[in-house]
Image (cartoon, rainbow, N blue to C red; front, side, top):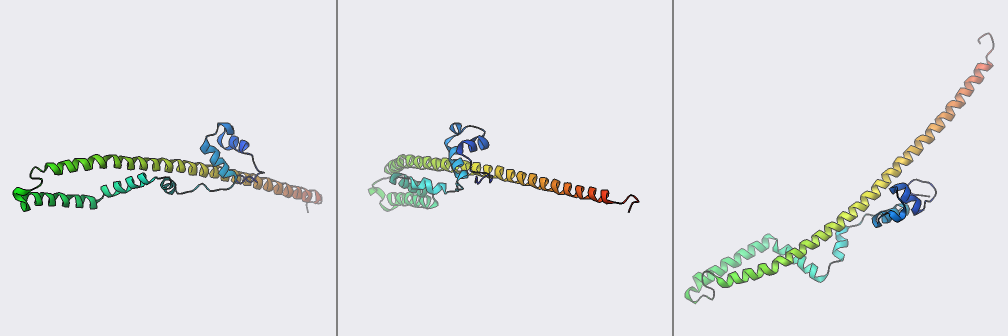
Amino acid sequence: MDPMNGTPTSTPTRAAEKWFGKALAEASAVERRVLDVALHQKTVAKDAALQADAQRSFGERMADGVAAFGGSWTFIGLFALVIVLWSLVNTELLGTAAFDPYPYIFLNLMLSMLAAVQAPVILMSQNRQAERDRIAAAHDYEVNLRAELGIIALHEKLDALRVDQMATLIATQQEQIALLQRLVEARTPDGR
């Protein structure tokens, strides 16, 4: 039985023509996958984030970790503390023997190098997030398409039930009319 409408099992070709209005060969890979899922009563729901995370390499995991730490209040607080300590050590504590006296040229060099390394790592992490979002959007499309097919199938089942009920009602009504006609014919001519 076709799980979508309760009729005898339909082939993918007939189902594609019925549900998508096109031949199976013209259907996209996503439509064919959803059609297979619908015909075999499988679920399409899956965690897109887990799927994206399973495909990450070591470098991508490291980039995500660096971006997560670099975009946190912990990093900002630690960074501010290091800059304040650097300034205090090189201005107040070491005085004229400071290894990086004001205007802190070595500190500026270190900050520039940190920014030069951190920026591409953050961009890599953003690219990963964009890929994760693309996977989630593709998954959402499949789920929505499957849900739409299910709703259409439910409407068809309700329509079929309504047609069956109407046929039963008409048959019952015809039986009652026939019974009434027999009763009228059986009446005596004097109206009793």
